[in-house]
Image (cartoon, rainbow, N blue to C red):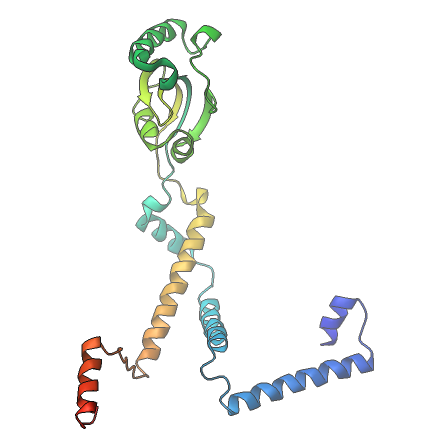
Length: 249
């Protein structure tokens, strides 16, 4: 108590302050024991929830020892898709707005694509297409990041394109896009060092989960659980009829 007080107030407690803390602790302990003796903890969901938390925290703490290198390697080998590094791609895109171009959209896209292929990757003002809130030049970005901006369908078609030439059009929710892929990195499985923190976190979480399941399975062997299902309307009607006839419900 003195150490805690000192850490908070940067001075030791006076005798009166220390006596007040001791008195409060004693009262708290007595009240808790008496309340438990009287059964006041029974049927209280807040107390029940807190006790469950403390029990589970204790079990989890006992199963939080650091995993070995072999543990982490085995976990990574057995859960490869959880840590797969997504493909990344860098590209330019020129947008054609279907609302602006109407029925000539496809024809204008073909003409613009031919002109872009002659011009190369650098896009002049005359070949810049229609305005779009998204950027024209996308640096090396992973698959999820591109999908968040352009949509899943656009991203799937984009990943099929070979770098080094204007291609398309490919469609997004916004309209049509002509695309020049600058660089692409294929999806790959990482080395352990690249994802060590995530692997260790997931390994420990799984070990704690299994420890809790094992604890509850073990506890269940010591209890008999009776589940009383509510009566159906038909059962209630039969019971009411029997009671009216003078029979025991």
